[in-house]
Image 1 (tube, rainbow, N blue to C red):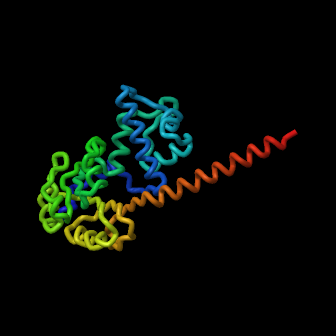
Image 2 (image 1 turned 120 degrees about the vertical axis):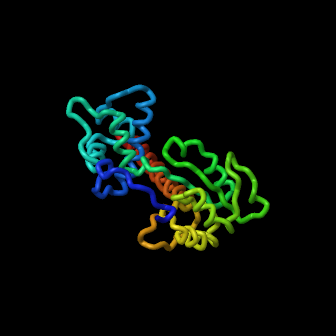
Image 3 (image 1 turned 180 degrees about the vertical axis):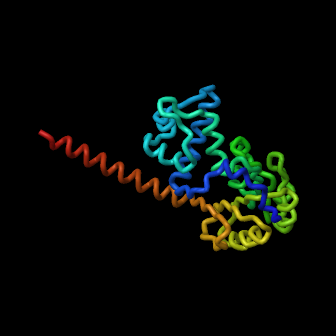
Length: 236
């Protein structure tokens, strides 16, 4: 068994249907909304109420949940605790995800100290860097390890997910080493497209790209508002 493998959850807990990426992203939002409802002591919720809490329409929510099975009752709604468990199982959050962060710069340190990971099923177990002045420093309860020792630390900490927070020029080499160590789930903040085998899942977070998309929508909204104001002035 490689260090990335763990016993899979029961087959009954996970849908064998493919979940489209957009629906998958919304499931995480539903789970967050359900967590708030649970914290407020709410036991049942209608599709309309859950959809409003998640910022989507009811038909879209029901379509998304249909990929998991049928957990709602007409006229009664959803059992908040049970639906939360089913979404968590579908997302793989019933497993123990042990995360290593490679790169102990400002972003890596912020990620290592983020308190929200633990409540969502992710435990940060290792932090690496190549800078001799940084290696050995403590970040929260973690001590920064050298990337020279990365493979042995990944095995010792039973890491099964890695976050790359490193410059573009070293990202591919580190990615290759991580994969060779048996890790198949990688979240990359490096500004480069990583080449990986088909069995490896890579999610790329490019903040500059997201800001550019946001700028487009902001500009478009501004143009539409100006056009609407112009039409209003011209109306009899």
